[in-house]
Image (cartoon, rainbow over all chains, first blue to last red; front, side, top):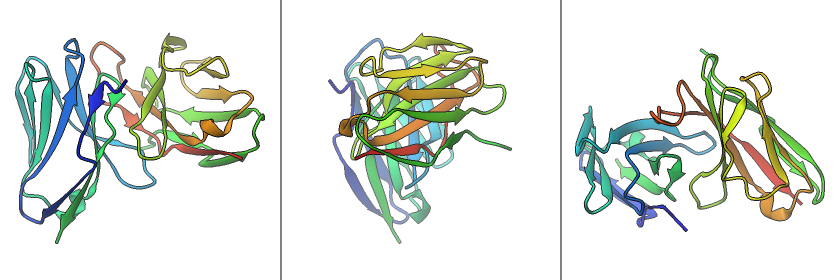
Length: 106
Length: 116
């Protein structure tokens, strides 16, 4: 059973606009969450993380929001750039979601 | 600086054969993880090592899968009597610390295994 769910397999956004990637998890005991980015033929690379004691973590253009009561987190990228086009995985502990393929249109 | 490396990058084998996949983690990283990624899915956790010992092997799908890390550095994932369903990209990752702090993991490029 999928413990981490990313219900949008793909997302297209215009360059300069905001990208919002969503993630839901099932286990309320999860206390640490990460986002990874993956380009074709490469392994995932770490992007940003958040622990359950926070509800927001920001790093440059990337912000992750955590809503513990809803068991939901989201990744905001603003402004989006063509180089952001990749597959984004939401991770809780070592459980990966199925990924969202982001395409940023120049 | 050297990242995580995995060999071979591609492996084609016949059903029923034995395969070994190798992972060289980043020097000094105590934790090592193996994942399997099938088409259209996210990486699926297989096993986690802290040093030489398998701290959590709950993700190994059955007893055909085995992994070792005898000196706390290089790890080998071993698959016996391969089946077509084992075809996937096998990813290895390492991190400075292991479970508990959930430090960021550094992934290798993966080994694409195809069982014919």
